[in-house]
Image (cartoon, rainbow, N blue to C red):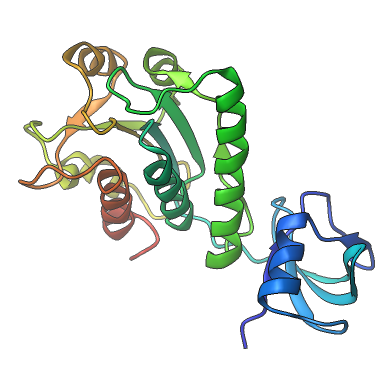
Length: 253
């Protein structure tokens, strides 16, 4: 039977007594209705996972005793970074959730000129905390023991400038002459032991990138590529591209 998985932000160690964070407490007590003595799995994002047992379930919170550590990792063979222009609230949540499930190492929200959602400083902080919670929840569900890094909001030029210069940088463009699979063979030809593979994927907002934004990304080394003959929605394109990448040269093989 698969055990309930909960993320705990503080460093874990065998024998330690920990209090579960509020989100995990609600899930354990109100959704699963677990009681004292129940077994679960904890992870702190620093690698591996821990056996644990609930000791107290009450108004003061949920406490658990940490057990044995297991050096289990379920990370992608390649380092995937998603530069995602802001989409509408629920669509952005969906992108963060599914990208986390598909193994991205980092997500950089990007303020595109055609982004429907625009954030001031206060709203940005709230959304950033929310996206991080979405990523944590996705990792609890899918079995990852490392939570993807959700960066603060960047403008497009800064996001492209800060991209790993050693990575394969791809820009989704429905009018590109090159397909996504055609952009990948140089990486696919590397030996399986080459663990330094890195891909940075840039995806526009609902209205797409402007010509100026697309040109700026190309100037920063991003190669335009398309995903078939159809134009995909802003929330569909990054997930389709990540799934295709994993199928071609990632951990779907």
